[in-house]
Amino acid sequence: MSSPVITRFAPSPTGFLHIGGARTALFNWAFARHTGGKMLLRIEDTDRERSTEAAITAILDGLTWLGLGWDGEAVSQFARAERHRAVANELLQRGKAYYCYCSPQELEAMRARAEAEKRPVRYDGTWRDRDPKDAPEGVKPVIRFKAPQEGETVIHDHAQGRVVIPNKDLDDLIILRSDGNPTYNLSVVVDDHDMGVTHIIRGVDHLTNAARQTQIYLAMGWQVPDMTHVPLIHGPDGAKLSKRHGALGVEAYRAMGYLPAALRNYLARLGWSHGDDEIFSTEQLVEWFSLDAIGKSAARFDFAKLENLNGHYIRHTPDAVLLKEFLAFLPHVEGGPEMLKALEGGRMAAFAKALPGLKERAKTLVELMTNAAFLFAVRPLALDDKARALLNDEGKAALRGVLPVLKAAADWQAPALEAAVKAHAEQAGLKLGKLAQPLRAALTGTSTSPGIFDVLEVLGRDEALARLADPL
Image 1 (cartoon, rainbow, N blue to C red):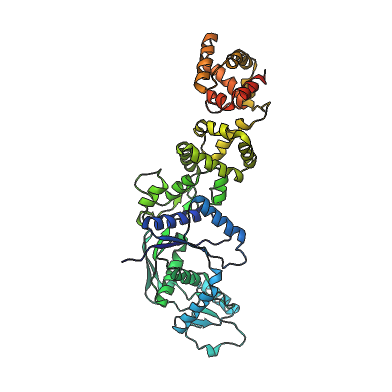
Image 2: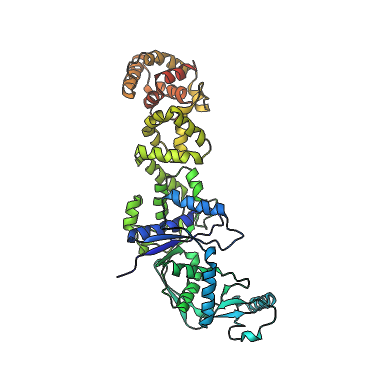
């Protein structure tokens, strides 16, 4: 019977959870859920100068908002340093590591020789087979891993295929610094082994590390986890993803008004595919996900595609669910807390009533918020330039003509209001647009809104009639 799948997401808390990290977390999460396994979370906080509590909080919040829950408590790598040191010493006892007493000056000379001879800069093994009795006095040694010098290290990778790295290209890396602090490659191996990780899914930029880590696994006699190194994310222009392309923190996407489900869908398609399917639910992603469907070439991040996909999700999300998402979004955007206060202060019913029309015209929650602003506007409304142009003499005359019709309406529901206004337009020899445009301008202060009869209904008789009278 095979052991259960255990994946892990292991970010460094030196900044926000960026979009590449979010995709890595998604792939780990989806594979764990697909196989009925677990996804663990490890915070790789060994860089004490750059690791911050704020970054840890941002990572946890970002994963939670994206809906990527992890199993068990998050593990701190720094807190496990004693265990890492113990494994370094065990490698020493096994003859798989050694003390190196090279001074900084010697290492610099080594580097200079390699550069002069146009060779790759690598440690030359000075202390590999020397007796520590020869050590100079007062020098605190590092511990180096005794890497195989012949043959090759092979990584069988789901995304990259069979990757072969000649052992002569890998030098004896430091696994324990002279101050007793373990290095990244040792810590990762020990943690993954101790946490029972069966599958490592991470960026292709870790492929060289994978060879070094494989050698440490084998030296300890441990099972090497299954590996998948996913392609990098590039911008639409093919260059490495940068801030101008969208390499922002997940919290920025939240503030830009993207739905978590839409972002999960979009990120899944960056480097993974299921036939030609572009739009799929998270449940379908979990059902379909396989490591072998991860591509080898870099994926391209495209804001226009993300925005269109998000618009699809907004239109097709049930109103009650979308309302909940919208209320959770408001505290994270400029002007949102004020709108939330207004909603909770008595405007919730009107907003919920307007939502079906509002969501048809919004690609993001920011647009939804902007489009809903007319509900919360204070009289007299501030008119934008287009609305002001629509309320010229002709527009005001149209309003004067239709206002008595609306005042006389016995039924303040959109269908009845539409019938009354259409009848008036026909009688006055006006096209409906000639009436609808100044109505919209006076009711919302803009030239775009949901259907004008829906606007009349959700504003209510008293507010709507007062707004129509204000410009006259």
